[in-house]
Image (cartoon, rainbow, N blue to C red):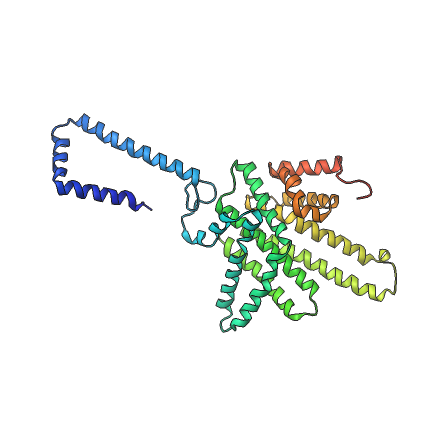
Amino acid sequence: MVSPIPIAILAISLGFLHSTGKVLEIADGFFSHLTILEQICIASLFFSVIHIVVSISRFLGIVYDGPGGDHDDGDSHHDEDIYAAYPFESMQLAANKRYRFGAMFPTLVDEIVTRLQEEGEGMELKRVEQIQEAMEPISTTDYDKCGMVVVEVYRIMIKARMKRDLAFLEEAKATVLGWAMIILFYSHDVLANSARDFSKVRYAVLMESYVFFILHKHFHEDASYHQLVELFLEAKENRALFHLMRSNANASKKSLLGRPSSDNAEDILLGRFNRMKEHFCVFYMPIAICMILTGVKDKALFESTKQVCDSLGESKNVDEWKSDAITQSAMKRLGMVPEEAFQLVFHEKKNNCLCGDNQK
């Protein structure tokens, strides 16, 4: 779209010259007193000045290149509705990365509430407010550390592959996926720990469904959409299987009358599902999200990455990885070229174990 500023300047200038009667004099002087070659030289001079001004404006656009910029860095979108969907101003004013990440959550809650009001026509306002209140604890849990990992890993991968930082739109979309992952994890934990509180169970089921609403709203036009949906469905299945095995193991213990848990095959299976759940959600899922966002399609690469993450999960305490180590060690390596980085981490794991015999 042409800026109105140069149009206004042109109109004012021509209007002033016309009022003084100089327009005809200038035109007559240009065509009557100058040779064709001189006219071409003056026209070329004007063209050069315009070209220089345009080049300078493009350079300034690349340096700033905020929402609506033309540089090819992931935010070259001129649809204002795209940017209206994200709280860029709140994110920019945030005091630190955690607050910057958290600035997205109220926007997602508002989208879900709007969806409730549209789809649940006739629903009492009190019910909508109760659902909104049920979502508030999500933002106060430690789950946000896992969600922030998505943004940080994506930042590392973009910097390594494209030699630049994340654009506003890229960071916003990665933040949305981080929160979608958090909402999924939180809803499953509520389901697992509130079996007798049916109101919480109903809210948890509803929240889980809105994870996929968020994915559709923000990514349905992206090439990554179907891969993201498949990944979130896989995570949902993993956590559901773990909770099922845990409930079965608890029921078995009650009927074993003191039989040692080490002899119980279900306990062993439960431990395997627990590791699978933790390693998948804490290690693999944030990396897989970023691989999808950067355009990775090779299914074999995703499978090998899952194996590497499982190995890394065995070597460190999960809580430590949730906070810092996942971005400071393994993820920095993954930020190179993913195909090579995954092999590097797996090679070091096999030849130079990070844990001792007792920790294995």
